[in-house]
Image (cartoon, rainbow, N blue to C red; front, side, top):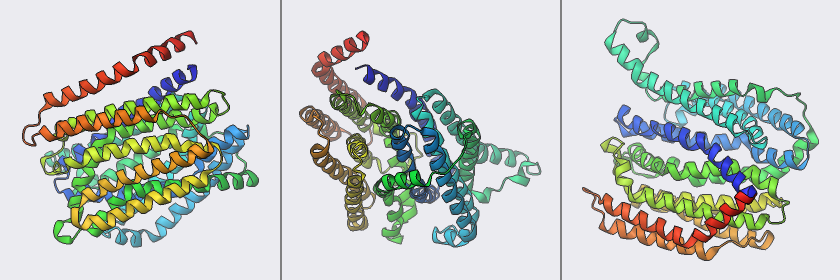
Amino acid sequence: MKAIKKLTGETVIYGMPSIIGRFLNWWLNPYWTYVFLNQAEVGSIINIYAYVAFLFVMLTYGMETGFFRFATKEGDSKNVFSTTMLSLLFTSFSFVLAVFIFKNDIAAALDIAKNPEFVTIMGVTIALDVLSTIPFAKLRLQHRPMRFAMIKFINIGVNISFNLIFLSLFPAIAKAFPNGFINTIYDPEFGIGYVFLANLISSVVTMFLLIPELKEKYSFDVTLWKKILTYSFPIFIVGVTGMINQNIDKILLPELLPASEEPLKQLGIYGVAFKMAVLLNMFIQAFRFAFEPFFFSQRAGGDSKKMYSIIMKYFIIIGLIIFLGMSTFIDLFMKINASQYREAVGIVPIVLMANLFMGIYFNLSLWYKITDNTKYGAYQGILGSIVTIAINIIFIPTIGYYASAIAILACFVVMTIMSYIKGNQIFPVDYDLKNFAFYLVVSLILFGFYWYFRETDSPKYWLAALVNIIFICIIVFKEKREFLKIFATSNEN
């Protein structure tokens, strides 16, 4: 129980930059809806960042998880660090070189032929973010969450600040002083390019702050590198399929919707609504940062499986509380966006539930990492991608972005079931399935009850509050003995 208390503490600390910082960063989305009144412009940002997500995963090719595994397994974290860093440095440099050579062709393919500089900016940004993954992983392995949090906070603060400077301050100054200095450096036609430029600046600052973590004696261990690659390749496949499951919709929507429906406009509306599920995403990300190194360090413990079961149970409970709270108050939350971006409110509960299953899948999936059966992660990821792509291709032309939301949910439900079945054969953990099913059904009934009586023009927030209170009371009533036992054991330790 002491280990669970430690995990809880580190999840909270890692969650500071992930929850507070990403929450602040998330405000850029509603901010963009007021800056870029044309939904197609926000759609273009979302479309480009979908490609960025794919490239980031491809250029890290599982090295982060490989670093964790071999830094703990080999007992020589410095050698593992230098080998993985040099590997990423070589591939990232090669990528940037290719971007500079083919930027015009890439820009044409992305329908931004007039602005090939966008490609250059994002290419360098991706490379810097890739190179920062191992230093950040090193901080997590060393259990230094405060420094991790500080750098993440600064990264987000710089990004937000330069978005405000480029998109609000500079235009205001340029308008007030037409002949001033700002007009020599500010170009209103650059538009969404300033979003990408702000991202680049924040990535540069982050790498500068990580210099102390980069100060090592570098050597490249070819034998170790081959071992890491062999272990990490299935993780790479998992990463690619994960990006397909979460981002292929942002690529397929503009391609599959008819031109008469203004695809980029629809993508902008969908993307803004999709981002409303961010609170649950942030909880999952904060948990992931703390849980992965915790999982590897605890794998030899005699009571580890019991611990994983308890952790899963309360992860699901917290996730369902967030799901129900966000789903029932979503009309209120959507009001922060410009009115022309609010019509996709109905997809938010679907995406929230998809994110919950994504988090459950992540918890389950660690069995194949710890048993070195990462190939099964690849198989499950490929299956999920097939489900995602098939639903998107078949249904986007008829039901639009609702198909994309349904595809994500179906994908992670299928992957969760498959991971549980196979994991139970290789690394069985006695998860509390009855309680999970009970809480899931109760939360869905309460959500359905609210949604049935919800009025679009005047949502019943008192009813939303009531169903959330009921759900929390049910949890407290059922879990109070377990809560008392955990806290009592933690105090003894």
